[in-house]
Amino acid sequence: MKLLALTLLLAAPAMAEDNEPYFTPEEIESLAPERCRGMVEISSGPFTFGDSYAAAGRRTPPAFKPLIKPVTIKTTGAFLIDKCEVTQLQAHATWMMAFGKSAGELNPKDPEAEHPQVTMNLKYAETFCKYLGKRLPTEEEWEKAARGGTSTIYYWGDVYDDGQVYEQSTSKFNLRRLTGPVAEKLPNPYGLYDMLGNAPEMTSGSCWKGGGRMLWSEYYAAVGRCAKPAEPGRPHNYGWRCVKDVVPNKSVKKDTEPQ
Image 1 (cartoon, one colour):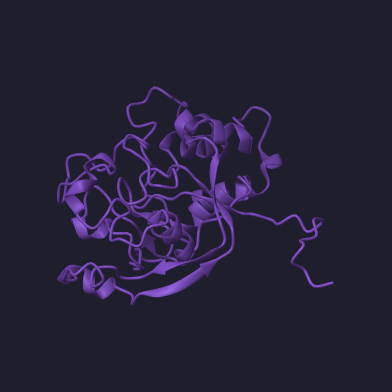
Image 2: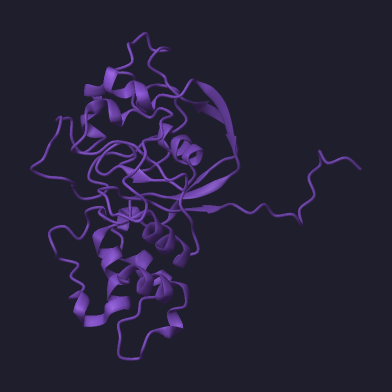
């Protein structure tokens, strides 16, 4: 029932009563850390999609084999993608819209306000993105963005241990701290933060991509896998970021167009 109420409110925010907290899409966007605001445009065209382990002369880790896809060339259209994962502060604002003061106060100084929001299901993530005029990325879009224009196992190269300055944790099964602040580490070549670490991320294909602080290092790799989430409708420890289509300006006629 809570998810239904939230879905209805975000789909039609005018339903909110005057005495209830209400955040416009722009206000929710502004709750992200300053370094995360705005989106990055990913150009259209082909990219390497799939397992890069063999190409790098490495053995595919046994735990990774069920998730591997063969190397292929995929093509996407141009799209915009959020620089960071959706934060707990941003998600909390939507809960306040649905449940008012019963959802608690919005506290930007909360120690985990800038951590990625997790323990939400796919429907909530889809609704959140839709309210902002966006959507979840496809599996192909996510991987293209995560690779950052590279074809290596990780966007920083083929050696996992070299990624300490880019991703949240190089520890296996780090259960003491499930997430960290977004954009705490360096971004990938496209200027995107935490694409292979912090929290695994949902895609529109009902699967999660990327690594997390709790996962084996192999899961950080930017390779074409699609790990299935928990049962539909159930929350899980995955985060997400949103994308938006780039609409071409059809009024501009290209010189290459046939006359």
